Image 1 (cartoon, each protein chain N blue to C red):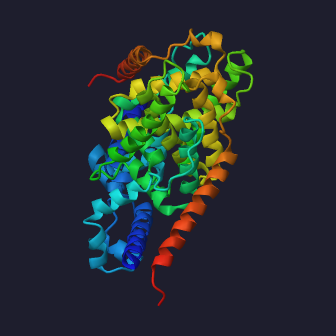
Image 2: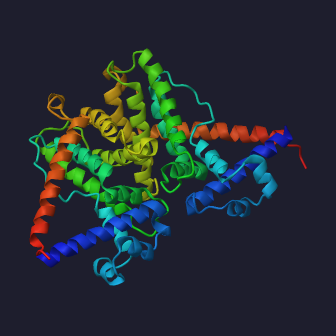
Length: 227
Length: 227
């Protein structure tokens, strides 16, 4: 178990360094050598976790998806809003998540599969919308695939614009505006007043997420024998 | 006049070449030398039109904005939809427009002002929304700046995703879905049925735009003396 906790930390350190170098130089100009120097690990350690530069990029791209389970909200469609607010929170604090969305939008990164992260988001949001529709939360004409694809694309543009304009300082507000325009076109009207779509929701969820992360790290530390 | 027509064509040829090289190599890795080779013009000709690589990038970024006046629609808010459909049409056929949006989203292009093209779109859409609101076409709670900023950001993400997923083949449909989600949240309900928000609108407007461009080129040719 101690060894596993160490391996998780090493993998995370390598991903952090890869993310930083990708973000600074773009995918094509990044070399494995630079990532090694930045991470301060041996070539052997890196290749134990990642087979190639492409594999490192895929690891960074994976960071977009949430690996921490949060309390499910009573209204299913709130989950779509919550995913957007949580990604906002993580974009503002985690360099790997930032590098992940930058890689997905990096049109110079022609040798990696940039379809996968978009498709993963579309599939994830489609699942949420399908359940919401089955529960009668959505307007009957809603096309689940179209609405999920739109939200994924729109979110990615809103965050890119916020990054260019003000280094994502207004992102929670921009995401709130996106949700306030999106929800009336997919939700039944009676449900709208029960949804939490303001920037405060990003703060509440962010705190819950941070607490879970901290607990997880403490659990990992407890597994490591004292030196 | 003949000289002016030639100058316009030379400037356009240089911009086309710059756009192609920017799109292939990204802003930072592009050199003026490569653009000269591609355009087949002298250094003197290039520097007559553009002061620097940055100036070339600004010229490419400018290509996003429409320089052809179209017939204004009877309903003001239709103009916002029409701008989106026209940009769709131009993104599918003009390499300079494609390079322009790629540059605006190129996070490696740190030495150029990428705020300007986003701000130009926000301002342009804000003007349309302000007039639409004054004419009573919009819901009373609509915040013009927020709605204009959202649409600019969402469009840029929708087109980027469509480019990644299928080389923009489904872009007219994606933009139509965006508009069909956006309009019910900003427009008065009675107006919605009068709006044209399907992909066919992109075809009609594209044809009108192409016809105006062709006429303009013929006028320029008529100004050039026969050899």
